[in-house]
Image (cartoon, rainbow, N blue to C red; front, side, top):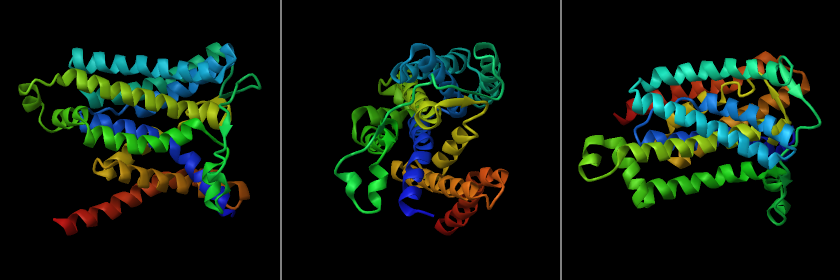
Amino acid sequence: MSIPLLLSSTMRFSAPILLAAIGALFCDCAGVTFIILEAQMLLSCFFSVIGGYYLHSWGLGVLCGIASCVALGWFFIWITQKMKAIELVVGFAINFLIDGLTVYLLRMVFHQTGSFISEGIPSIPKITIPLLSKIPTLGSLFEKQTWIVYFAFICVFVAYIVIYRTPFGLKILACGQNEQAAKAVGINVNWVRIICMMITSVLCALAGSQLSIGFLSMFSEGMTVGKGFIALGALMFSERKPSLVLFITLLFGLSEAIGNQVQLSGAVASEIVLMVPYLVVLACVFIRKPMKQDIS
């Protein structure tokens, strides 16, 4: 197994999960249970392909993905904020709804079942960073990756600065820690939470675009395969620390990269390989529980 290839694959597989997890971090800090990450990523996968295929531009495809996720985000906001519905129930319902909707739209728009593959789907160009790509072994991290992959890792540092080092970040934390106290000092809690949900929607849209037109240039039913839920798992273990979000998502990306290499070798059945990221989630649960007991 080639180490440079493994590192490059880890970075590529980690990026969509990292984007969704960082987005969810904003919502979690603001006190919002925003569990429609899976739905938003899958919706973006589909509309990025539609936009790219019919408008003949990967850039417009990405914008279509963002527009679809922002619309879905506003739908979630309307139901939970205006109609006062339970966020957890609405979130699960939307996840199932979008899963079925994309299957239906695939058949109605492209007259295909299972997947849609075409040379007419443009892919996001790959970028190689000249100097960094020459570093021995580690240079593969900066070679032939899309701008979304690089942006995902930049978001880790941006999220830390915004949440923990800016006045707006203090408002986010105040909304999450004590809503009534935040309102008492004049913070518009609803708008802070709406902004956080829109940030999450955009980041999930980019994650979906990376999966469909950044990596594979295709759409298949349920192609996110639970990455949105894995992102939620990464958030749960991170204790609201962007650095831990990065570490955990890299762990998931590494497990997927190793699984992919093993699958290509034919040594293990593909169904077993698909189980690997979820086994990592379970492992994190068992590791974290003793750690918390020791601390207490």
